[in-house]
Length: 446
Image (cartoon, rainbow, N blue to C red; front, side):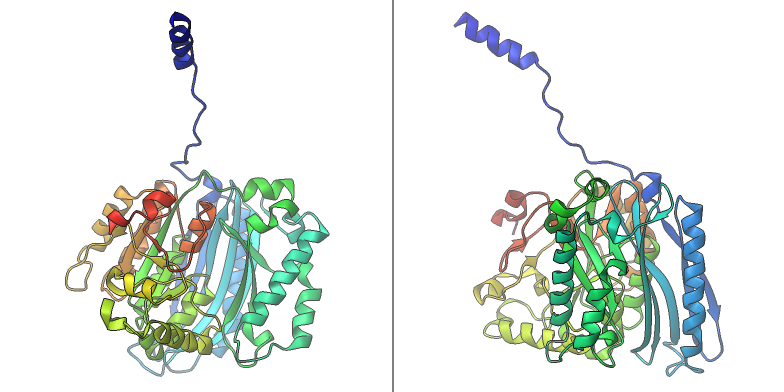
């Protein structure tokens, strides 16, 4: 007995294996902000160009040159006069920024013209850099072998063909895309290799973008050693900003614009019967790399959906096919009343929230203070509920990403966050956060 006790005491004195700790600050190579240069033309027509500021001056200069060129190409396509002087006509040229690993940063830059609640023009560029060296990345820096390229080619073909399901992709144009894959523009976020294409390259008269996303987990065996290190985000603190009840004329645009300026992306849970008021807002969110998800076709609660769950889901998707060509993959039930959607097999994952933004009478009364409160209480894996339909939410988006970045957070979409955490998203299952399966799915939290 004495020997057993001695052995127990010795074991207790041995150092425990160190647990992997999440980083509480972002390295300088992952820091980014954007500054805007704006022009007010005649007749309520505006040009806004946003320039990223990173730790690498050579990258900053190259991006400035690119964005200036994109602005000059697009400007002649602006209308001479806004269709609605109150709402205005805009040319916005701005990058969405993605970070992964210790120093890889990507930019999905778009030039988008919007007038009379329509998206009338789109151009884009996608590129990735190692901010530590300033080197621009190619697919050869990511994919190590031909088997990996075949996998990418298969995913590109399958995902592009799935867009606009009522239409047939141009076969010759698709083959040209596949033949030129080695030089395809791409970005890298925390969980996915992303390739981007103009929809009108395959589907006539579509002024939107198509995004192909391939999880790092599928590519892992085919990655270069450098890419394996730079796509490991297991120590990164992640948070998902989510916006309900839109789209909203003008305000959704400002939320997207302000989040991009802070290096953030988000998930928009949209209401289907609002799309026809401002389809350009939905297209903007999709084209700039944000996630578009379901908040039901009508904003009605619980039992009012009984017997209509599948009808509403399909009706929302039919509306989205007209504008962005792809269905929703995620849902938030109005009011967080998920049970009827589970009972009637909506067939996609459902998302509650772990944090909700405070508001009063559909207004965030002090956006700066509320941003400080949310950032001060943020935890890794949180899903934060906000509303782009609420006044002040767009102003809060000006400061919230930076405050979160100061605490080491990257603001990502729900799918990106759960992919990094290695948590599979299951249909008809409710998720509250991305910390652990047990906590996320705990029925007592309802």
